[in-house]
Image 1: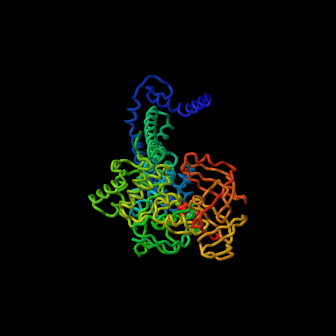
Image 2: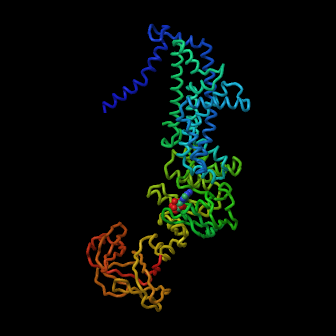
Length: 270
Length: 360
Ligand SMILES: Nc1ncnc2c1ncn2[C@@H]1O[C@H](COP(=O)(O)OP(=O)(O)O)[C@@H](O)[C@H]1O
Ligand SMILES: [Mg+2]
């Protein structure tokens, strides 16, 4: 018992110690990233003066929220078809293809999408230039997979007689979906949204493949600036990021738990 | 508003869930579908509600076929086994859902909700969410919701399955009184014979997708038409026998026993083989060594199950077979007057005997 606790402690330390160091050093006065001098928040101010970083940040935010919205719509549609339509010809292939991006290496996804965009450009003249739009499309394609997994598991555990009861009481299929199914799976959809948002915000590899001149997401800006030498600004930025991700993942975990059937699904916090 | 089910059949792959079922249910009747698990009760009910479509046959309400109508256009409402209350809506919203689909005004919907909530005596809980209610309360709300649209036909699928035994007995009577008050025609699906007998005017016994017998609880219990129904409802003694004489009463010779049985059943012909069926409560148990005659068997007590109001006594006959008799515990020391391995005589009236065909 004691041993397992110590092991667990080591495990967590290994995972989170670097992160803690990073947060601490973001408040370092010194220009050198690894030498502590004194406490200061000056790098946070420096950060907000860096236009390139700020622009990258805003672009990332825009792409991430649009990605989350689109993947939630398509992911929910895919889940609904997978779970509710019973067996249909090609179901196995469809479900396989839907979740394949989960295990596909980013490099392959990125490269294949790049080839697609280039090919499309030659064929129909669109997209004429790669940039925010192509990154958005690329992110949506792989985020759909994650949303589908989250939403379809919730749909599967939903009592099917709820929809039948609504139909029995006179609601047509469309009304049943919007009044019964959607509100009940909404927590899963929201946590899918947050998941897609986080994944998109975080992606470097795929974005690098399908991006064009002028469209640099935050991870791309950081990555290229780090190659010229690490500025403590990056520490400050990383700290802000960690806080954001912490908040959004806690929120998605909380949403998933609060509305789960095990807790009665009342939405009442006790 | 009579409901006619005409030669309805339904298969899932090679499973013949419902086979050639025909039933007529009268206006205002409470009708029970009784049968073991997997015999096709739910499938039949779902065909009435519109969630399954029959392979053949017809379903008519007031003479009009409803098969072409989707579930949301049928004047049929169902109370689901799991209750299927919408977890994200309050009690009030749950009940208002049905009437709202009919395009009623806010005023009318509110009146309906009040009306049915009063009917099930749940006015106080209108603002609660389903998860904040007990099982019995959820059941009342589910009932109220399925009555809120004033259906021509109410379907109840295993309505008591989720309740504990004590509550179940109370809710059975209460549910019947509510349904009778509304006057709606009602079909109850159950695998519990006591429930079927307590709640319904008529019962249909189902087995392997087919209807085996239809009748009032009394008809089903006293005049079962086959071995299956006889054994399914209550317990019964079945003794193989052959007809030896038939006049105004029929005489049978029991197989592997010396005794004869006399009964009033006059359908039998000489030489035919039957099962002599006698309910345990119609068998008299005596510790005195009475003179042997027809409708009389000797044996020793094999087992006694003391149930308070009565005891079920298992008597081992001379041929080794076990026969059951009920002994009413009229006096407090009734149980102590009999003991294991005690010789006893079993006897019964000719009127209590029923003959059941061997084949099936
Ligand atoms: N949707 C279905 N698909 C395949 N088989 C089914 C389906 N529904 C019911 N069955 C089968 O039909 C038979 C009758 O089922 P059901 O009507 O649910 O029985 P009951 O309600 O009397 O227990 C069972 O053998 C069951 O497995
Ligand atoms: Mg059933």
